[in-house]
Image (cartoon, rainbow over all chains, first blue to last red; front, top):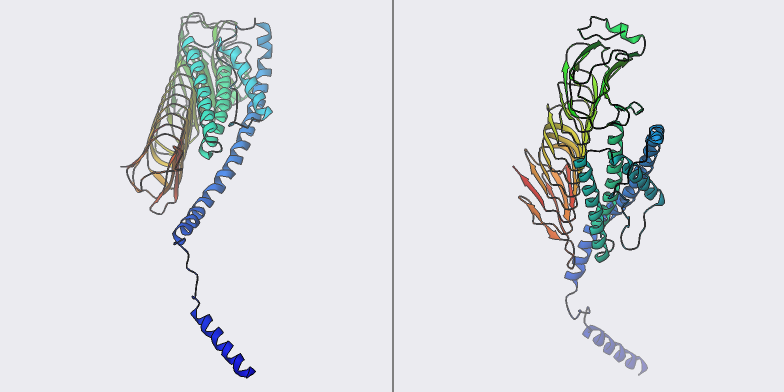
Length: 204
Length: 304
């Protein structure tokens, strides 16, 4: 009897198992969304890495330019000290001031970068009095243009924090401003080579 | 060794002896004609500086440097000196004096010389010089030629024009507000401006990097097989016309500017809720790389 009863239970269990569905169907088809997310991740991954790497490289480049510009400024300043010491201090030229550098809403630039820019701006302010009026006015307007551009990018970054394109453009704008200040300082240094006290030599 | 106002017959080796200040004693009178010549060693360089007026430099096939022209009123003297392989030509002003009449210098240099010209408001024109060149002016215009050697042009407000010979070299141009016109240059080009307009026709670009804040860039070029082109602007417009076969990967993006392209897929928005657009596309084998970025300047990429 017992054996018969056990056999009967097994047969019921077998039937019950066979009646169960082979798989559990989801209430809706999830695969299209999963596939779309996988594809997006795969497509974005290689793009994000270079962007991040680029940001570090750009930051390093800005620091390098800052250091180079500071060194250039120091060397040029030394060569000019003698002549400047003998001349009355030039009148202050409005419009040349360091750009208040802000890298997005929550970042600040490196102090060395600020120092280089402050020094280049101060040197340029001394030399601008000797420049032709039209060139001086254009230079002031264009330095203001670069400041306006940085402010515009910062404002956009305030709305889109972490936007890689905006961060890249802002870093490059700071870099370009520093490089431009260095070029203008160099231009005004070598261009007055006609003065007897000048010792600056142009390197080919 | 003394430079007279007549053509010199001095042997080149004689100029090695020592530093010669050619105009220390005999000064050119202001407003008077300049006519000086000195023998130089081949492979040397010439440095010229002037404040106002013009500087015209021409390469010739003699190992001599000749300076003619007129010294402007108010200038103290013209220094014309050579030391080793460097010849210097500079208009000397009275101490702390900057307001002088124009001085026009016409300088002939050995064709292979290196050349450095620096002015404040004087225009610069250089032709037929094959050595490395640095041409820079605060507000004067610069007009030069590019060959196989490096050429660097820098101005604040002066315009720049450089004509290439098709030879591959390195050309660096920096202006603050001056425009630049570059034609038939090949090789590597680096350009930076704040508000100047760059108009560029390149033969065969291997490396080009252009940066502008608000100035426009218009460039027509053929990309080398492994060429790299990088253009960036904040608010200036960028137009790129590619000639010849195009095998390049494009990475173009703008935060709020328009992107127009005459081939490939349409640009797409980078984010559903942000204004950015990007266009990433590979044409042909995609060996060359084109990268264009802007904040709100419009971008156009077409193929001619």
